[in-house]
Length: 465
Ligand code: FAD
Ligand code: NAI
Image (cartoon, rainbow, N blue to C red; front, top):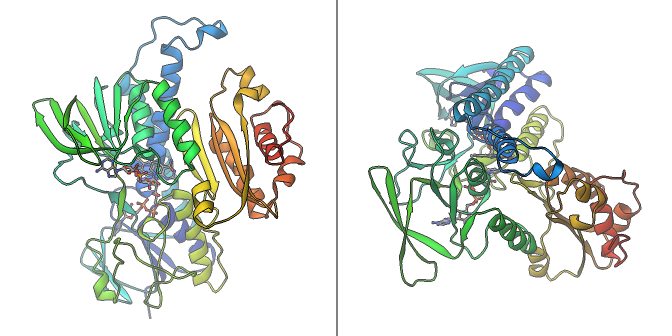
């Protein structure tokens, strides 16, 4: 008889959610985690500590930059206590990772501490001990993609990855971020707000790959206005550190004359890769695809019966909420139910200021598919609440099918974009048309009214523009 009905490998948002749900469905469940705490990348070195620092640094910038003076709030003598800011972040992380431990106990999920490796398709070994199960869920997540020739050393705090950039001991004078993606812009924002000059070096001709083209262009304009130096179509060809100074050699991506940039901190943020090293997948009869991911079917089962995979280690966007939803669904499948994740409607949010949020198709997706579509846009400069708050950067862009009017994509730049996008996700799950958005009553005065007006603009008839 097997030791467990289900063993989950990895306790990130995919794994810990799958374990709790499986236990709630009456399955005898264990979760193996190699880290010292539960919660994976997201809780320990990802979503949570980055959002804690984004919040704290935003408060600091507001208080310190004189931005509040126009509201009649005069502050003097504001000072940064970086140690205290970091301690508050660590406290939030500890409360949340401890919370998962509590939930494991409450739901009777056994935490097996250590690194798991397959012995066969029906057993794993952890710290020299064997455990068998009827089902395994691989939820081992992802880690930083290295840049060849650039050695990351988070302890030294000079050339760091996202984990190192969450705990720099002091504010750098000049930080160079390699990669103009989500991590580069979020963590670049943190250190810019705390006083660093920040240069972003991006290989492509626009930042934020995968987002709608207008959003990419207009967000870059806003970030530049905030002081970011953004060098697109640029590649780093060399990095040399002497003492505390690092010199980067950069060249136009298409080739051309090289130039030098000096920095006292370099953040490498060029993407993440799935974690399968040391899992001994071959012993279970499994292999990865050419991107290092574990392929799964609609029920999250791999090519080996009884072995499932979810989250960052599988294809799709590397996002915590995608992993969590897959965690619930895979447990339901294992328990004999039908789990549902709509992979066409996974929202993406960049937690800068303003935030950038997106759901569904971009204009480029639709052009590529040869689809006929209509676009409606509404700027926050014409939204009464944004105007009252003096917070008018950004707009809502809605893309709808030209014939059926079904909404295909919603893209938002706004201080509240991450919250606003939830309305669009729900409506799109129910197949809403732009007319449905436009004829739904939105409270006044709220930023959400910009969504209604953008929907009206799809028909060419917004009221306030
Ligand atoms: P992970 O969270 O990576 O967890 C995998 C776990 O498996 C780890 O704890 C690891 O120790 C463990 N493990 C691996 N191999 C083994 C093994 N063989 N045996 C035992 N244990 C093992 N996403 C968002 O949606 N919103 C955000 O705001 C956001 N911010 C981010 C900020 C940063 C700086 C980073 C780096 C990422 C961020 N992400 C964010 C992405 C998010 O963290 C990931 O998508 C999410 O954590 C993936 O969850 P997962 O369960 O697949 O894997
Ligand atoms: P990313 O894929 O978002 O961005 C990486 C960027 O680096 C891209 O713009 C790419 O073109 C560029 N790049 C690649 N190689 C380069 C090179 N040699 N030189 C210069 N630029 C180069 O990856 P990132 O920012 O590392 O984030 C990893 C993952 O973590 C993402 O998939 C994201 O989904 C997730 N994440 C999500 C967050 C959120 O939801 N708010 C926050 C942080 C991370």
